[in-house]
Image (tube, rainbow, N blue to C red; front, side, top):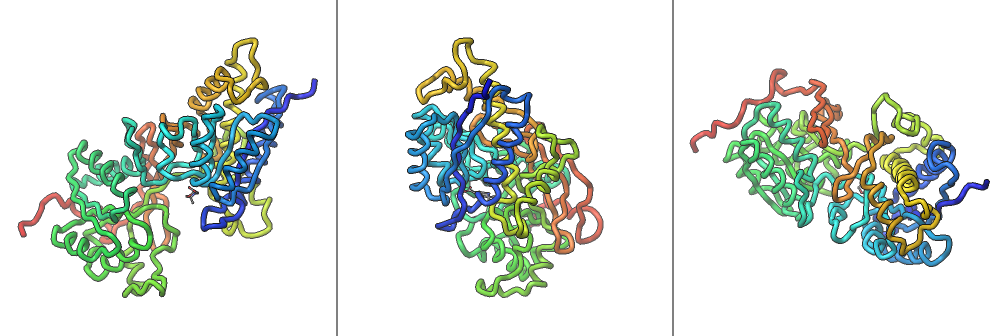
Length: 436
Ligand SMILES: CC1(C)CO[C@@H](CC(=O)O)CN1
């Protein structure tokens, strides 16, 4: 018999009209590759074939609304929606429940998307931005995987005290609160210095308080100002350890002329040497193949064949594993739904008001758990991707991977490759607060 077609909708930001993320360039081919792979598998959705209608959202919410209307009011019925960047995911995931649709986002990083009240059927294979912005309904576990990891490293090096230096953007404020709560639980003392725009005064206070272990929570422009002042104030080297956010580009500390930093590239590099960063992992480095019989690296090589140009210039290339895995999550959820429906109801009976299928499908997505090319794919209660966090250290101007942190198990896989200015152990514990 002819296979029955199951339809889904997908939006892809093919170019960033207004400075959004043009991730569709790599993520659309990755999704198409996954659809082909899943449709070729006899053990997944036998008797069915997946078909996607896709639109170029240009990362524009308004355009995406028009496209959502098209998905919904032009037959055939869609069973699920894939979305890319955050602004588009926000509008589509807020509307989708009205049509009992689950939304799977491969590119939504905004912490605001963790709000289960606003986005009750949203799941993301893209990790929420490092700085989790816990919603009002903070889940019991710390949402900020990086916070857990930073505390883990403090304990590893027996640091009993650290200082948070932060810019007062809301997203950093919530992260700082998370970090302080975790530290308090572990008996680690935390001081906090805030600034907005100009870190000069906060840096002077760090010096007066003899801060040694400093966690920086700010965007990259502030990071360069902080680093240059750390150089001039001598807040770097043997007795100090800096933690920065892992988002920044590998050469973020080169001083751009237009920012008029009074530091040379050499001075910035000297101050940046040996700092740590934490970020979510998007490509599995496992040697064990994923459910698709490919390892993360093999997936990356296969996708690279699609492009003539250097993949460093292909929009969304780092996030492509997330898009590929989103289709597998969707296919496995359809498979699970098919196996859990009452006898008289079939997947192809899905309609925008069929509660039984919608609820079964939601539960199947919620219980997702498989090895993807982006790593283990599982979702938290708020639909967030539970991702591993990667720790790197700047050594000789290059970032080196120090290890991985698995939030679900709390395991820290450490490679013992960290280096220190004095060539020996980490800086002395700064608990003894000098009398001023
Ligand atoms: C790491 C980055 C670049 C964060 O923004 C995501 C896009 C978005 O959240 O709109 C894509 N991935």
